[in-house]
Image (cartoon, rainbow, N blue to C red; front, side, top):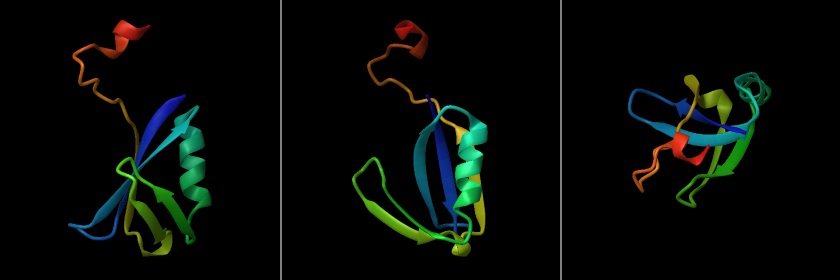
Amino acid sequence: MKEFKITYFFDEEHYIRRFVHMDSQEQAEKLVQSERDQYISFTDSRGIYHELNTRDVRVIQLSEYFRNDKSGRKATDYR
């Protein structure tokens, strides 16, 4: 599975970021599209619960996310 970062922008200064695990970017795009104009809820990596109405979001960005391993090992070291 791949990890994708979804960022919901409300204005130039305020946004919420969410990470999802999907098999492809197309699946992640379908998730975002299926949530249009709805209330969604999720808990972020810090344990903070978010509930938002996607109708109030001005811009949504979606991209594949590659986490950096803080131990100094590269992702290719694990393959």
